[in-house]
Image (tube, rainbow, N blue to C red):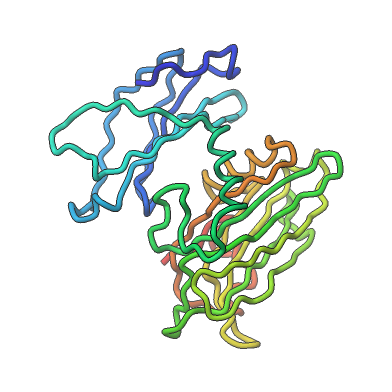
Length: 293
C-alpha cells in the first residue's frame, strides 16, 4: 500500500501505480495494477529470478510511484532505492520513504555541475553495473525555442574488437514527427578512454508547439579507423522515447523552466557492427532501442 501521498487537489490526479526495477541491470521490472484513492492498496507480489545470493550486496530495488491521468498522461511523484544487503532472510514488511521528484531533479542538476570529471560512476544510484552509459544534460527555453543538449560524459565504454580502451564520439540527430532528419551534429573524438568526458553542448531550434513531436537520437560510436566504426549503443528521447528513463528525462526538461536536467542513460553491449550496418539503426530494430546482444 501507499500512504501520505498528495491528494487530487495537490497533484491533479488520484490514480496511482508503483513500478519496481531490479538494479543494477534494470532487466527485471514489474508494475502494479492501477489503483485509485488517497491510500491505494495494491496487494501484489513480484518474483525476481536468476539472482544469486552473492549478488545481494551489489543489488537493489528501485521503487517509483506514478500518478496517472487521462490521455496516457503520467507523472513520477517520487522514488526510493532499497539495497538488498539489508534484506532479512525471513519475510518482513518495511516502510520506505519516497524522495519527491522535485528533490531528485535538484540532485541531478547538482551532480551535473559538481561531479568529478573523471568519475567512473554516478552517485545517484546503483545503476552503474558495468554496462555502457552516457550522461546527458537537457534544457529548453520556451521563449527562444532553444533546446540545449550537453553530452557530459560516458561510462564503461568498451572496444569490442580489440583489448584496449576505445576511441569514442557521440552523434546527435533530431527527427520530426514523421521520422525525417531535421539536423545532426557530433562530438569530437575522445581517444583511448573507457569513461570519456565530453562536456560539449549542442543547440537545436525547436518551437514550443513542436517540442512534443520531435525525437532526439543519441548514438555512441567507437571509431576503429578513418573508414570504420562500430556502434556502442543508442537511445531516443522525445516523441519516440526508447524507454521510461528517457521519457521521464524529456518530461522533466519540459517542466524545468530552462534549468538543466541531467540523467544517466544505460545500454547493454551489442555485437560488433560496421559502419555499413549502422547507417540507419532504426530500420531494423524500431526507433529508440539500445542495441542489445
